[in-house]
Image 1 (spheres, rainbow over the protein chains, first blue to last red):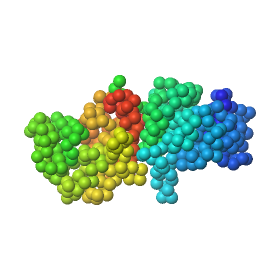
Image 2: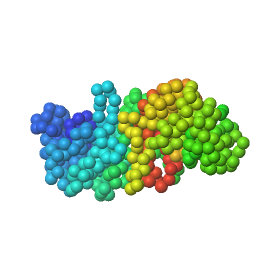
Image 3: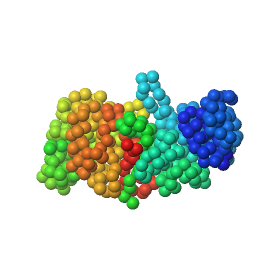
Length: 218
Length: 218
């Protein structure tokens, strides 16, 4: 499949590397043309890996991934061009983290809105699916880093798009029964609001190789 | 032990019933004297169970539990009297849920504050410990309702108070190694912000007999 990734940070490069290793063709999009991170990534990753702009990545992908920092996601998809995303699935893996100078981390938006919902409102012709934002990017593409059974969650308005994302997660190594469908895109609120808890767990364990397993009576 | 419970709702009555069954003496405190829920609960629960006001419950307990709805917790402890809580452990099990007429549920406070922190600021001579707010009250007092290993979390400034709460959780059936210490009372933010995710899981499963197990690499 042709996949566009918006964002050249660690998350975007990690997802892109795994997708190329799986045989997909990937354009990693940056804000401006000639971005060193994107060009270095493509050179190191091989012939299926291309650097590009946000708009080139969006136009390239049959499926597009938002891997920007959540607080700039709206601006990034505007630059990517809603017309380049129309009719496509946009997998949003971002978290709206705001880092204060004193080290305090908060979310924006939070509580009565989410990045997932904002993206869906900004892109009415795109099928936004929230997923993967609940784990570190190394765990995203290699669930075996965390022993035992553990879960991911998907949220979105379009069942077909959620099935498409769940299939892609399957290629990453996540069994279909480890992916819980939490409903519409407004469930992105709860998924993004996991982040303060996740950061505390990371501090507690001293690493990011952990994940949630939901235990249930039936 | 003598335990005071602030709040006569389902959570307070369920915790009180379990504590009496374990041999503790409990005063269940309500906003006003002669509260029917508190008196009915005491009559049904036996000689170790007493009805009272918020202030009577606070004065009675060697340990006190805040089981009010989170949004009224500050007003409740003001009525309970900071002097009645001074030097004691206050176990805060509340969530700051705000129910809108359209059914939407949000949190207040959220993101840059929490009920746990507000209680600690309002009661500087009290050792506030946040715990148990991450599970349904029936699971609080009977972890075996959820199969397998799963976790609780404590947050607070005082290590002794967290140890006291962890011991009480042990009486409820939670092994000490299932109780993760997430640090200071500001970790209450992340614990309270789990609630939107928890509500989505409850909708997904159709019941509340579930809990989180954290899987970790080491």
